[in-house]
Image (cartoon, rainbow, N blue to C red; front, side, top):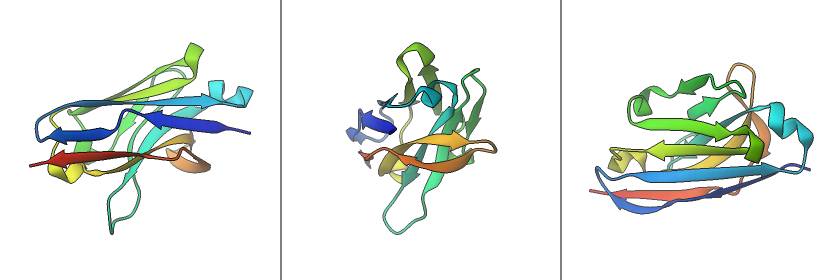
Length: 119
Protein backbone atom coordinates (compact mmCIF):
# COMPACT_ATOMS: atom_id res chain seq x y z
CA UNK A 1 0.00 0.00 0.00
CA UNK A 2 1.39 3.37 -1.03
CA UNK A 3 1.37 6.31 1.34
CA UNK A 4 2.06 9.90 0.37
CA UNK A 5 2.48 12.43 3.15
CA UNK A 6 2.69 16.12 2.34
CA UNK A 7 3.98 18.88 4.56
CA UNK A 8 5.06 22.50 4.35
CA UNK A 9 1.90 24.38 3.53
CA UNK A 10 0.83 27.52 5.30
CA UNK A 11 -0.06 31.18 5.05
CA UNK A 12 2.28 33.54 3.25
CA UNK A 13 2.09 37.04 1.83
CA UNK A 14 2.18 37.65 -1.88
CA UNK A 15 5.74 37.59 -3.14
CA UNK A 16 6.80 35.16 -0.45
CA UNK A 17 8.03 31.59 -0.65
CA UNK A 18 7.09 28.18 0.66
CA UNK A 19 8.59 24.73 0.28
CA UNK A 20 6.38 21.66 0.16
CA UNK A 21 7.58 18.13 0.80
CA UNK A 22 6.01 14.79 -0.03
CA UNK A 23 7.35 11.56 1.38
CA UNK A 24 6.32 8.35 -0.39
CA UNK A 25 6.41 4.96 1.27
CA UNK A 26 4.86 1.54 1.22
CA UNK A 27 5.83 0.08 -2.11
CA UNK A 28 9.08 -0.44 -3.96
CA UNK A 29 7.63 0.97 -7.15
CA UNK A 30 7.54 4.45 -5.65
CA UNK A 31 11.27 4.60 -6.24
CA UNK A 32 10.80 4.09 -9.99
CA UNK A 33 7.80 6.29 -10.51
CA UNK A 34 7.42 9.87 -11.58
CA UNK A 35 5.99 12.08 -8.88
CA UNK A 36 4.22 15.34 -9.02
CA UNK A 37 2.19 18.05 -7.41
CA UNK A 38 -1.38 18.99 -8.22
CA UNK A 39 -3.48 21.74 -6.71
CA UNK A 40 -7.14 22.47 -6.36
CA UNK A 41 -8.62 25.84 -5.57
CA UNK A 42 -12.22 26.25 -4.38
CA UNK A 43 -14.62 25.84 -7.26
CA UNK A 44 -11.90 24.82 -9.70
CA UNK A 45 -10.66 21.57 -11.15
CA UNK A 46 -7.53 19.95 -9.84
CA UNK A 47 -4.58 20.91 -12.04
CA UNK A 48 -1.03 19.70 -12.51
CA UNK A 49 1.50 22.07 -10.99
CA UNK A 50 4.73 20.19 -11.62
CA UNK A 51 6.06 16.70 -12.17
CA UNK A 52 9.45 15.03 -12.09
CA UNK A 53 10.71 11.65 -13.27
CA UNK A 54 13.23 9.50 -11.43
CA UNK A 55 15.82 10.74 -13.91
CA UNK A 56 15.10 14.37 -13.10
CA UNK A 57 13.10 15.38 -16.14
CA UNK A 58 10.60 18.03 -15.10
CA UNK A 59 7.31 19.38 -16.33
CA UNK A 60 5.51 22.50 -15.15
CA UNK A 61 2.10 24.02 -15.53
CA UNK A 62 2.16 27.28 -17.47
CA UNK A 63 1.00 29.36 -14.52
CA UNK A 64 3.98 28.40 -12.34
CA UNK A 65 6.84 28.27 -14.83
CA UNK A 66 9.77 30.36 -13.66
CA UNK A 67 8.41 30.60 -10.11
CA UNK A 68 8.17 27.01 -8.86
CA UNK A 69 10.85 24.34 -8.86
CA UNK A 70 10.26 20.65 -8.34
CA UNK A 71 13.00 18.32 -7.16
CA UNK A 72 13.29 14.88 -5.64
CA UNK A 73 15.53 12.78 -3.46
CA UNK A 74 15.26 9.25 -4.81
CA UNK A 75 17.06 7.75 -1.82
CA UNK A 76 14.37 9.20 0.45
CA UNK A 77 11.45 8.77 -1.98
CA UNK A 78 10.69 12.41 -1.34
CA UNK A 79 9.66 15.12 -3.76
CA UNK A 80 9.85 18.83 -3.05
CA UNK A 81 8.15 21.89 -4.47
CA UNK A 82 9.91 25.19 -3.96
CA UNK A 83 7.40 27.96 -4.55
CA UNK A 84 8.71 31.49 -5.01
CA UNK A 85 7.04 34.77 -5.94
CA UNK A 86 3.75 33.42 -4.69
CA UNK A 87 0.54 35.05 -5.85
CA UNK A 88 -2.95 35.04 -4.33
CA UNK A 89 -4.08 32.87 -7.24
CA UNK A 90 -1.69 30.16 -6.05
CA UNK A 91 -3.98 29.66 -3.05
CA UNK A 92 -5.16 26.06 -3.13
CA UNK A 93 -4.84 22.65 -1.54
CA UNK A 94 -1.70 21.05 -2.93
CA UNK A 95 -1.61 17.30 -3.42
CA UNK A 96 1.22 14.91 -4.07
CA UNK A 97 0.67 12.21 -6.69
CA UNK A 98 2.45 9.28 -8.26
CA UNK A 99 2.35 10.42 -11.86
CA UNK A 100 1.75 8.19 -14.87
CA UNK A 101 3.41 8.52 -18.28
CA UNK A 102 2.21 11.57 -20.11
CA UNK A 103 2.01 13.43 -16.78
CA UNK A 104 -1.36 11.88 -16.04
CA UNK A 105 -2.42 11.53 -12.44
CA UNK A 106 -2.67 8.13 -10.80
CA UNK A 107 -5.07 7.03 -8.09
CA UNK A 108 -2.39 7.55 -5.44
CA UNK A 109 -2.89 10.86 -3.65
CA UNK A 110 -1.67 12.39 -0.44
CA UNK A 111 -4.01 14.06 2.02
CA UNK A 112 -3.19 17.51 0.73
CA UNK A 113 -1.67 20.60 2.31
CA UNK A 114 -3.24 24.05 2.28
CA UNK A 115 -1.35 26.95 0.78
CA UNK A 116 -2.85 30.38 1.30
CA UNK A 117 -1.32 33.48 -0.24
CA UNK A 118 -2.60 36.80 1.06
CA UNK A 119 -2.53 39.98 -1.01
